[in-house]
Length: 363
Image (cartoon, rainbow, N blue to C red; front, side, top):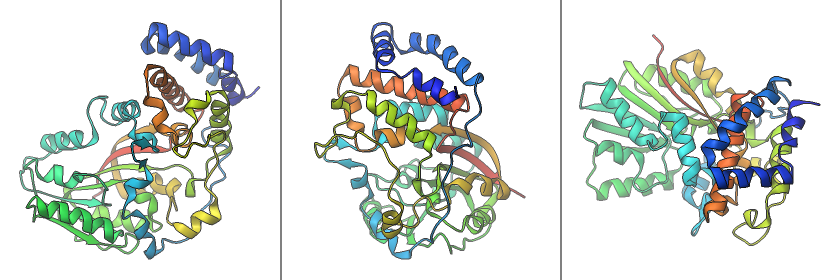
């Protein structure tokens, strides 16, 4: 019996109910201590599946017109009050924060600001954001208003999104933040000028990774740092057979109320995006996501690499995320799912689809 089959046996309806009741009665911490050894024993007796069943392949080229679909990207993550995306859930955020910063209550921006204050004496830092984020305010605004930056630049292909964030910065009187449209497959950066370069959820849209990371390395000052939060899972989000088999077993166990989507339909099965359709609407989506870490290692010196999960939670919770923070029961189930994913990744039964890293200039 292989490792995944053994782990799947833990997720029978009867066992799931037992686990749920145990957490409800005794709390998550008590459950983790009891269950962790069981999961590791199972994985230890089986094979390492972290590189198996991976059928993702590389396709396509970034289409310069694809930026327009990201002009209002937040609508892809939430409809009204209904959250579609896994990382919008508070318990998931705490899980991610713990992986990235070591503190479940310290978010990414707070961590980066603390990092800057600890590693740089200057109060006039120059930074570059690779990718424009659809948030209010944008992270570049929060960073600039901290008082330690003299100039921040933001580059992205989505002109509409850049215009929106530019207006918000202008309304706050922040003339020192520059927004400009750039094709990251062709970008040429000024050399030796940036103290910090940030990239969050953008590099997986880049095909010419070698060029981009060479530009990042050359653009950093000698003591400059590159901070990245990124998807590194299967190319074009073509989930592996192993991922989908576990996720669909979980979906078969979950009560219907946790699988109801915002349109009232029930999510009974998880599938990879249709590749033909994906290539039509956004051929840049995860075009070489699997290569990101290796290419970066060849061109930058990595000083921190934290795997942050998402291998199960991202496909599983897509379109139904809000159902898992409705009440104590739903949050308890979510904590169990987070634990299950974490144990699979730590035991190398599955790879991590997301990563957080800090790198420095390779001299």
